[in-house]
Length: 410
Image (cartoon, rainbow, N blue to C red):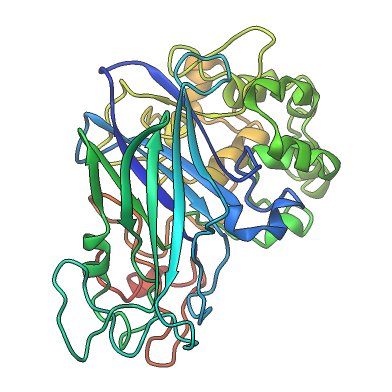
């Protein structure tokens, strides 16, 4: 369970590449809790960033940043509010120099109507903002609003955050709370901030059990002693970590623990520098030469795919990761195969990248989110209810055959 901040922005023109970073407070990268210091400040911990051409509005781009990772749906009475003391940023580089050209800022304000009550929900089902139902429904005791700016231009103030998905007695029709808190704040600009189901699907425990053929991302290329500095650094300064991309420790770990696999290269990994630090040539490259800016890159001129391939570019789907990142992209399997030199036939044929067999089939066995995504903004699935007939359900991938979560479709 996470509290993601989401925004959809108009695209200025049909082509062009944007590169994206997100941060909360002093952290400047998405580390998924690998950086030790940010793990102590959960509400500022930016775990995942997504950027994709909006499938239902192809002249727009959707940007998503997730914060406050690994929450249990029943973690009351405070649940997982945004922090009033944290600045939540999305930063976009349109010129390929590793420095932001667009800065989107979300600042939150909390209000407690009755400080003498321990319930954040109040004394009844929480009423809708747009159409209050009256008794027994009642306003929430704890509420949050936010202000959003873009390059210091105020786009909206007093924008409401939906309540957490507490349970059927407190938040009976959760889709109505979400509908009330999707805000149009400018010319083709829509924003939402609130709790959603975490779309990052993986077997999280196995990577720390000696690799386990499980997830890695850019942060897994950086050793523990450097992760805090990397997480707090600017993309323009990422070249100081070049050696970690060229000589990835995780490749050596895979080679050691899985001797039956053909050995992946452990040195001179210019392919990782290119994909993670510069962009794929002719697709989404933003910089070349000795530069390395570890950012999420999106070519806005590549249209959304009707039937996305979870393997993204590795599967021949140019609208997917590492060209941006969609909610359905299996970033774990994609990056595992990349680090293991199993890039697949498409990249072998078109970019002459290694395609070792069976390295091109490795994965964590978790290939989709356990709850159905929405086909419209904010796209992420409804957060799991904190209470549902005495059953707690919050294990990713274990519930794929149950048909998703229990809160409707918003």
